[in-house]
View 1 (cartoon, rainbow, N blue to C red):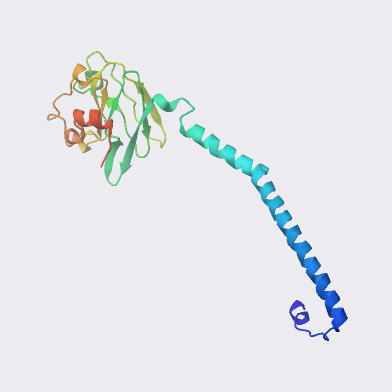
View 2: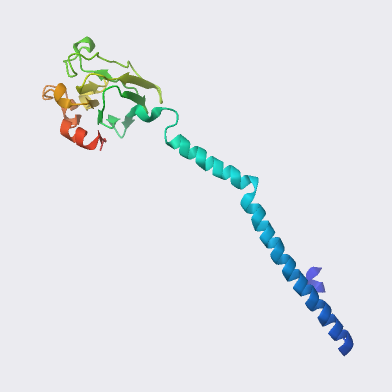
Length: 211
């Protein structure tokens, strides 16, 4: 219907009538233009200060606060354990931390342990002599965690008892590595010795990722 109406023709108006129509139409156009600009400006002002905009800004601020570790995780170093692509591994393989740092080991996939090389765990000693040996037991669920706090300075080597021969080992350097230097890894089973990063690389980089 609208399309049909727009195509209808009307008789041409007389001169006086035409002049009156033009004046009326022109005045209405001016008023419409002024009113439109005011409405647009008012609309923009409302949009800039409405509640939705405030909420978005608040959300962004909250996100930044969360990202800075407001929950106290600034002093926690996380190591993930993976089973992927036929490999069982830690990522990072090696980390350098200060004494008293909390190490959080998180199982991401598969089943693994985080076990210190120590006679109490049935292995040779590869952590500082005065340090307490640790053993997570088997972490089989995705997201399961095990936390340790290492206070004795030196080099700590640890393994997954389920996959040691496949190279699932890790190294943590606490403070000064010379306080308890790394042991020779030639006698480790299978590929274990191949996956322990050099101490100097760990200290220089802070963390050595699995590649």
